Length: 221
Image (cartoon, rainbow, N blue to C red; front, side, top):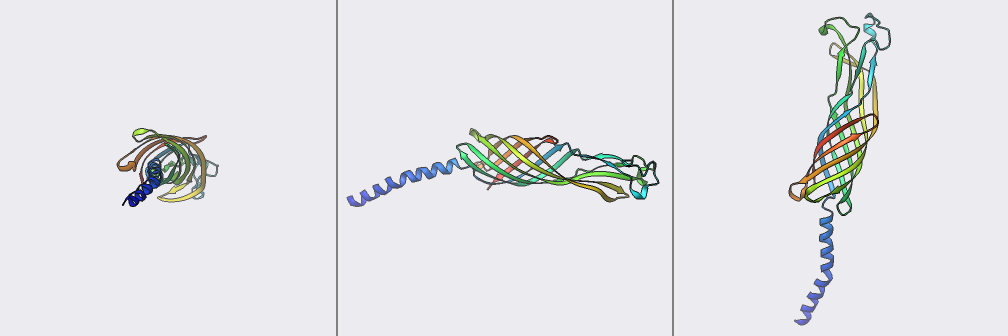
């Protein structure tokens, strides 16, 4: 009996440090894992475009002069953002994250040709639009007690722009461009819920040509 008790005591003494270490690791790494992200993003600074008059409307005043139809621009951009984040702890309370987000928006800017004097219902229009894009980023975050955290990230962003003519409800692209730009992203967020799996986050976007902000929610799984 004494021999059996001694063996149990030895086993407990051997496993106890490992159990404590595993518990500490699980606690320390509670921020590790994948999250689903959903939110809203606003950007300003999109390109402007000077439209030529559509060839079929060359009869209009200065119809063959470059830029005669007027200028449009998708300068204020509003997007629904949907994506994912992978985050892992590098030091106690400090994490590194990698994000990938799709951007979906309705950012059309349209007006009647500057050289078209017909009533709007009969006129020709020009437009610019930015219907979609993407964001890819990485960052460092520090977690305080109570779920509050702050971070600093860097993002590479992509937005698709289309410029063209809108004649009686039928659109024809005159130019398309894929705009790539980098932004620095300071952010603040708060985790809450069971096991801190839910989060909300506010982030700025500061770039040379584009600036803006995003607000979103995340769910860790």
